[in-house]
Image 1 (cartoon, helix red, strand yellow):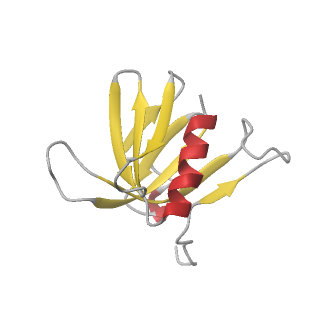
Image 2: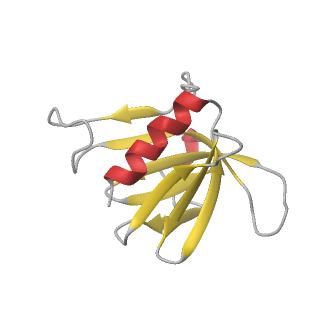
Length: 116
């Protein structure tokens, strides 16, 4: 597909709302599988209360590798020891993801907590 891919998460807003129903956020995050597997870089996409990831931004036209509905009670917080790690709790499940900077972590945490 070509084109440059932003290194920082991008908040895309429609209708002037910062995080309204038409807004979405996308960017590189790291995810870790079950157990103590290494971090894997994935392109994450948050839109309409659904978090999905793809191998790269070029894959977003197809089906995501993974998707999660955030419509349930959701809370996101930074790890106490490493502020670039985010703990995303949806119902009783906690998902751990990692950002590339503290600024990125703050942006994603705000987006997750706004999408309840």
